[in-house]
Image (cartoon, rainbow, N blue to C red; front, side, top):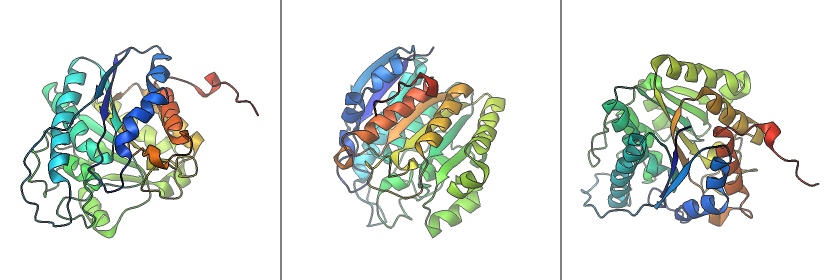
Amino acid sequence: MPKTILIGAPIDAGQKRPGCLMGPAAYRVAGLAQAISGQGHVVQDWGDLSCPVVEAPACPNPAVHSLAEVLGWTEILADKVDDALSEGAMPIMLGGDHSLALGSVSGAATHARRNGRPLFLLWLDAHSDFHTPLSTTSGNLHGTPVAYIAGRSGFEAFAPFPAPIPADRICLYGIRSVDPAEHAALLEHDIAINDMRVLDEHGVVAPLRAFLEKVRRAGGMLHVSLDVDFLDPAIAPAVGTTVPGGTTFREAHLVMELLHESGLVTSLDLVELNPFLDDRGMTARLMVDLVGSLMGRKVFDRPTRAK
């Protein structure tokens, strides 16, 4: 089994509600390393990264904030993810808000290109995150990673994305909050949008299996980016962007078990956990439990809880 490397990314700069920087510590306290090693995997924890100081050009969009910080995080995360993959390991980013994917997927893309393999992206999120720094009205850069990854213009302040991922290699899954500007741009790029309507009509299995089969046929690498708001806020309240109608406990575990059975996942983001908003750690524990399923734990392995 490949080694798993934990990389803490205590980044709060991609949005305005403080608390996500406590995410890496919450995952560790909730037993993430033990959940992974319990499935027979070697786990190495590289600790928390520190954001390098970088210069940011003036952004034409006055709403954008914390650009220099996000640029710094993007740079260091890209390097560290590439380093971990180059060791033959599976990096897991402990976020931190979703702007960390600007760097994590960039690092995975660099590694994939160097090794002549196509990179695929599975985006488990309530939001499409398809704004650019020029189109965002909130100014929150955690709403921009998929646009950067897909090669949209408007990211002149950032290093060019190493190898933009074609639309047919990106799967947005569990989406249920897309604003009109993002919707129009997504239609132009023809990215697969498996929103909650699709999952309600067809179930969680068929759309995911179809995407995983594409990855398998291409001999691709698969980066999975898991946002807490992929889950219904009733079971995962520790997120600043709650959207009703997310996946249930059972659906989320099924997704993780299917990913494990595919054997295709090569890197993983865990993002948008805000422990300050949690209820006695329930969201952190659920996210850790989901990673356990991704690493091979089955439903019938779980002990019955006392009534």
